[in-house]
Amino acid sequence: MRRFTGCFLAALLLLGLTACGAKEPESLQVIAMDTSMTFTAYDGEGEEAVSAAGQEVRRLERLLSKTDKESMVSRLNTAGGERVAVGEEVCSLLKAAETYSRATDDTFDITLSPVSSAWGFTTDSFRVPERAELDALLKNVGMGHVSIQGDTASLDAGTQIDLGAIAKGYASDCVAEIFRENGVANGWAALGGNVVALGSRPDGSPWRVGIQDPQKADDPNAFAGMLQLKDAYAVTSGSYQRFFEENGKRYHHILDPATGAPAESGLLSVTVVADDTAGNGTMCDALSTALFVMGEERALNFWRSGAYDFQLVLVTQDGRVVITDGLADTFTSEGDGYVCETVS
Ligand code: AMP
Ligand code: MG
Image (cartoon, rainbow, N blue to C red):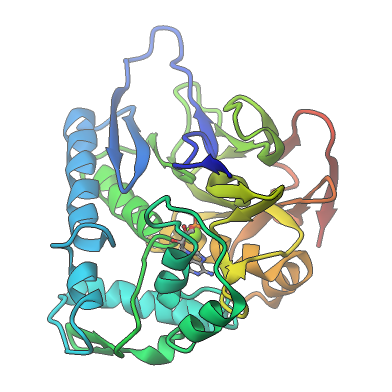
């Protein structure tokens, strides 16, 4: 069995070069939430901002981690059906998760946690579960097994949650808020595949956010395309970010709640882009996961429905990069081997 573990650092690579003569930016790199994160501030109280951002992601890790036994998520997961006072912040994130599940026809589902564990994605002890095992586990999957009341929550016995598909997006919202509180108008934060780009580069041009070429995941400088963004979130979910191979078949970490198996949707990655309105980091993270499960046609229909305000870059298994028309002026094709299509 070949094993590939850990998140690739450069799901999105942010290129921000300091202009000649401009003030050096304040930058901090931390490992938190199982991810390498970088915070960079070009103005305001930059040092305080990046330091507070580092503390914030560690606080959120302690609150939301599925593997930290002391976290609120772990307490909820091990409460055996009892109600737990998880606090207002966790409850509002659970409510957001519930909303995105409903909006995406349950393709987004935080209660897949036991299924994800059965595949070994929690422990790195990868295995391919039998159909019967998955069917048994799926009985406890679904937001109907989660109850949120005030600042308390409970899970039905057998149900467990994993906020891995939304927590870093939420963290990016919190970091953007900290930047603003510290007067940082120009800067960026990359939390693995979750990027927030505020303002612009020192020369006034947009930030350049590279979309990793999923077929060259080992090369952080291989891009399927480049986005030029100001005041925006960009979040990528991809099958290349975490997977293992057994008997020549690849099994990745984004599961289809309908089957309990890695989503076979014809996509290699989904990037969701939205403006920097508060909460959009969380939205982009939830939607990138959900739309990966949906596949191209459903994802584009969801985008066309206008339920949420965002744009998309889809990299398909058959070698296309599909962008929605709102990105036409900001996206440039990179590398070779992909055919680029703009849809409206
Ligand atoms: P992301 O990288 O944001 O797409 O999140 C992927 C992670 O979320 C996985 O590693 C799992 O922990 C979890 N996950 C997998 N499939 C789903 C799904 N369909 N809905 C919600 N969370 C999921
Ligand atoms: Mg996500």
